[in-house]
Image (cartoon, rainbow, N blue to C red; front, top):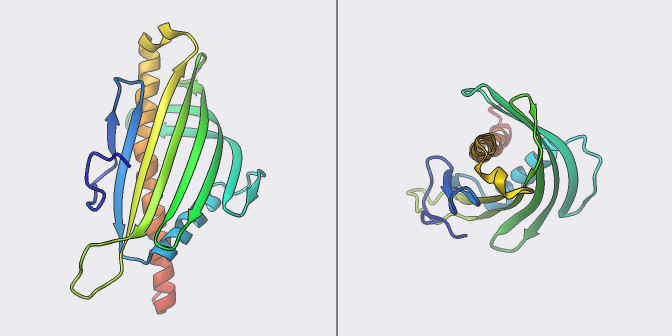
Length: 203
């Protein structure tokens, strides 16, 4: 993971890096959770399957193949976009870490209530989950969850790259990536906390 910050440090929020002037967007996030690696991995995988509930696609063991429609809304900008997505997700479990990798084809359909043509995005992303190394006074366990999402826009007509509307759409996609990572982290952490409270009899 070619992250702009050390992977053993936390990021306060997902970091967006426009690596090649809008031709390649990279989002990085490092999150440290006060839970074990295995339970964190289970929570991440369960969240993904819960999020994708009802999609009748192939799901064999550690591989998920799916296609679906997706809507993103930017409440602040009062902007909505809809996309068609095809993706393959793979989970690799090792003794000292778990790596979840997915590749996606993302085609925008509507943006700001207008039909979009001539552009699609290719996404290459992964999440690395491994034991944390931050020392604590009570030797409590921790897990480091590092995310990297790379999205590359492809224009069927090179002139579209300079279209202001396409620039807005690309910026919207980049912002949605950061928001999605934040939401996913919160959901996983809440699942782990709920499980911990149930096990302790406090929930």
